[in-house]
Image (cartoon, rainbow, N blue to C red):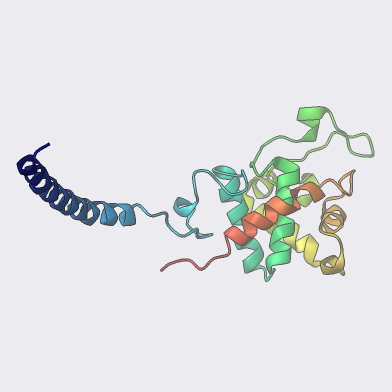
Length: 197
């Protein structure tokens, strides 16, 4: 390559950088505000529209909305983080955080100790003696029924979480709820941030 050609090549290369740099600046000026406008909203316990579609710890959609209802009900009843975790663990263990209108009898033929069929429904799989069908099928009311019983359990704060839940729910396996503790903690902590005005 001759010296003349080299010079032309250099002259052509330098404006290309400038044009490329200007293009990059323009692209950044356009794309950064778009990206900022699409930034995920902060997770807020009272705003389901802020819940991530991917969920929290694998729990999503109506499950996360039901968990948020439990957390709000617990908070309104004066229960802090530990109580909130117990409520979410319970509903995970009883209904996988779905508000279902059937229970152990319909799904597995389970009976009560006296031989009668179970009548459990809702998030907490509460039987007839907990309240009416309407109460047990309303997530906030069902959570309130759970927390009313938990409040009456002396020393629940000092018990292993699964044991405290067992004392309220009277599940056949006192360890049944233990496997849900880590996920319940993730959800409660995820829902505990400040909500933007």
